[in-house]
Image (cartoon, rainbow, N blue to C red):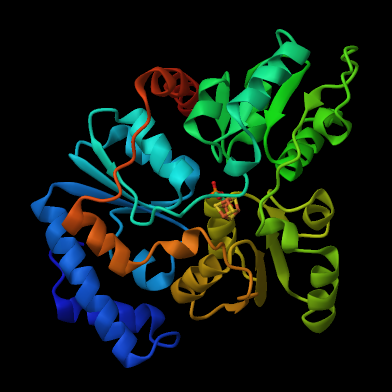
Length: 345
Ligand code: 13P
Ligand code: SF4
């Protein structure tokens, strides 16, 4: 990306997203991207871009694009001095956990996540007291102090494999209620939610203990949306992220992480696609496949991912902001949980 001129960037954007952006927007995006790429080179930085970044950013500045798992792996192996994370805070924190000596920047301070905010380290300590000896799997969509209380992390791309890798009958799986229900179904486990009722069951005749946080984006999709779309487009392929409810997943044709969804569309010959996840990803897939018809629900945008813009990424590099820090005792314990996950492959 580094050698691209302003004109190359205009051309690239025009080819990819010419039908989504006006000419003056393309010119402005190319100007910002060109300046970002220049500073990135000058400062020996790497830019990681999550699949939910909007197309003018996604297609211009990241050295690596991908899902949470992919970007964790890229963060673990970079030799650059600065990591600019175009994604939300828990992702940037994970990069810092894996690279304590590097500077990690997130372009927008407010880029949070409803799942990460749905559980605290104290909640995990309480669950451990309630269920002594039961291993804790935490979704990467958690903050570092929660990861530090966990045995292992997982992402949507490897959750079932992580649960099965533990070889135990009972697992605590936090914090996404829907992902936990979906993984329980996939791995043939019963599930209970102690924080539904504040219950204190001790007889472990069930095998997965969940929590009740939800993604504020994926909980919006419904079976009714799918039924209505199928009525209008009988040949549509419906692809859902596993943060959607089990009912939505059952009514879909495919479920997987953001990378797995992208791959499934790449490989499919369906005539239309309904992608039930954050809607900028639908734009990115549409840009990559002008021949395929994407039915997008563009009102369903993650407000946190939406905070990350080209303008803010430029300011991040210019001002070395916002620096992500994780205090060392938490970082070291969280690192074990993240590295255990990465080792599973
Ligand atoms: P992926 O790991 O599938 O990219 O998902 C991350 C996320 O935040 C989904 O909402
Ligand atoms: Fe968090 Fe949901 Fe946004 Fe993903 S889409 S970052 S889970 S709020």
